[in-house]
Image (tube, rainbow, N blue to C red; front, side, top):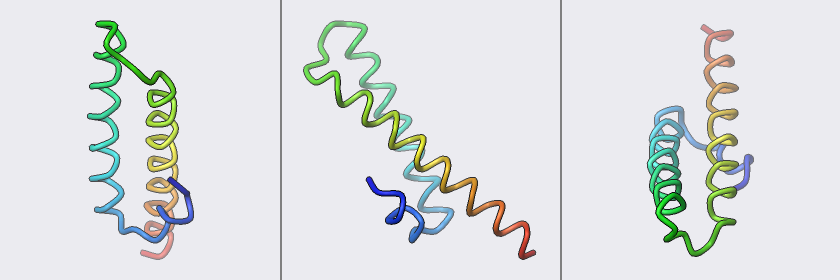
Length: 68
């Protein structure tokens, strides 16, 4: 997931994306704990995607505050 693509989304879209990624991360961590995780790289990718979404979300919220 590219940050440039995330910047085109709305704040509401980013918030829903963050919730989905957090749920996915929880499921992957649970699979890892039980030894059922087939692709450990997926855990890292989801964690980084979530960080990107949160970063862009913070940028957009700060920009909205400045313009208001």
